[in-house]
Length: 288
Image (tube, helix red, strand yellow):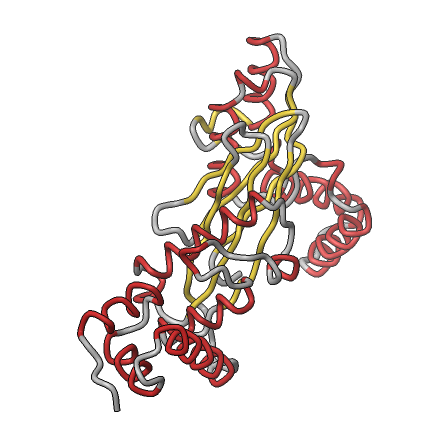
């Protein structure tokens, strides 16, 4: 067996990020050949990934990257098994690199991301293989659960990550004055993260869904013994409350609860003589 130096072990660790003992074993198995040892560790990572396939990956982080011109952005959720790994530099660094890659390639789904090539820091591997390699490094299952690309050629994209990186939102704002809409877009992203709207405007709520909700409220009112002539008013009132909870523009503004989000948008239009509307958003909370 060839003599394995501490320097060789360190070089392999720097290249792969795998623990010192595993690097030493890989070099011993490969008679000191660095390239063969790297491939050995990659195969070991793939084997471990297959072994842990059935494990629950309920921890991880939400990550957002926005292009410098604020015209596009990505939000993703990468999962692992424990909070300890999720908070580590290896996992967070990999997640950030994955988000940057998805942004630069304008990739819109986890499935589409699998064939992308990571940078040199991650061996130039396809994302699918890099996830397996990271499993070998970290000893835990990794899963790219969510990934969305947002594009705003007619406006601006902004995002917000709540401290702890377990909750985040990205919003697409249409406006003819994007250079003035940065602060507004940031407030909207924070609003979406905090208040969890489902749609941007009332017209976005599917009619059949509202009909279903209305019937539920109707049956509840009748079950409580309410008279038929009052049921329609009760249903209308409950639907209004529902809209205020799930429709972004009808929610109370988190920075001033005397205003609705629609008022904030209206003030921006008036102050800057500008068009502005929320054209889309995505909100992720870890595990949902």
